[in-house]
Image 1 (tube, helix red, strand yellow):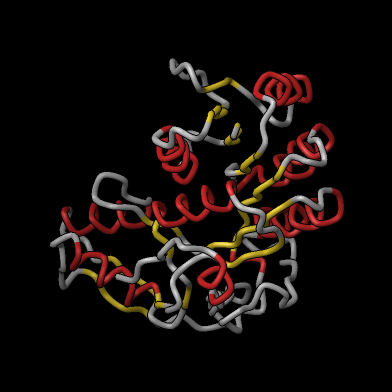
Image 2 (tube, helix red, strand yellow):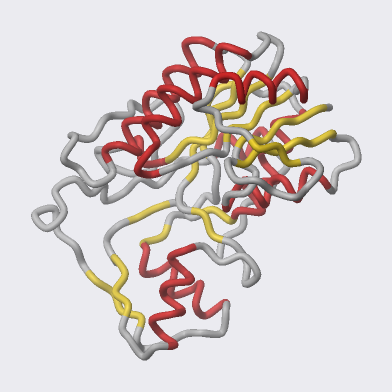
Length: 274
């Protein structure tokens, strides 16, 4: 089976790429916008039509996995790049599109796959990112039936692959500075290795549609990262809880936790809980 990973050098993409290369049943090609001196990595910009056309023709993938994200330029990635990809894919090619829990803008929590998603007003800080992901899901559903849309909450890795928030918390602690984390904002936190395993399992099976990835349990930012620091042996009194109000953050979705029962029933992948 031939797999093309779009965005193979990002936080998720690089983990997925490394794991896929370890699987002898897969022929793997990854893409990066920056030049990389690796034989299985191609220099590709999905917003440049000839670039992505050449990549798809050269790799002839059975499965394409979209791991691309760019918070401030997500609209370009989706409205130009994703459309370029969808126009070139054969109908038999499976597309796995990695989306986000942030499309649940009402913030009521425990969202199932078919619950309604929404848009943020343009003045909201995450509007470009969230609204583009929302549009991307619609493009995929409307134009390419052989797809999986996999929604995930915030990602984290192990000590050798720290996410940006964990890295910043550790830096603050080492610099003797406090770090305040929301105690009343809830998410489904997902280990990047577990998500990679799930995506590779989906690449090999016949499952299609929307899936919510992650553990069965939600956490607040404070409770999750407190356990995370304890796990890393870095528990500190400088890490403090903070309550946030809707008045302070009018566009903040307080609870975008995901109901992940469906993916637990369909896949053998285990999603760990800290």
